[in-house]
Image (cartoon, rainbow, N blue to C red):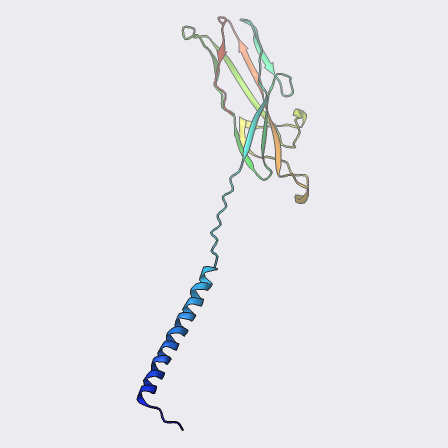
Length: 185
């Protein structure tokens, strides 16, 4: 067995210490290096329903003279109001028609009024055909954007429904002028 001097022993201990330090640094470096390639993905998706409404045709009672009496627009008449609503096929819509009881003369000096009564119907089969419309009792309700008759895989993403507004006004002995009111759908 070879004889080891104290200087050689001390040199071997120092070399062993350095070898341990180098090994530790290499292990830590590899650990840190592997974390550099780690990926963290925080993916957040917020999906909000989208809806568009278009006035296809305004409700129009036309020009009427004083004491004309009752003027009525029925469902399907050419002067009824028509609205197109386009939305995602799974959406349900709460529809509410609000209107004043009377139309008021735009001249603030004139207190004459015209009584108005409105109704609403909808067609959620995707075509503008009032003959297929359902009357919305109370002028409000929760409606599916589309009446489903197709299998899910054949379905379009966007569907359309049509709303029809119709009704009557009663023109009595009133002054000439423009009568108006806010109707909110």
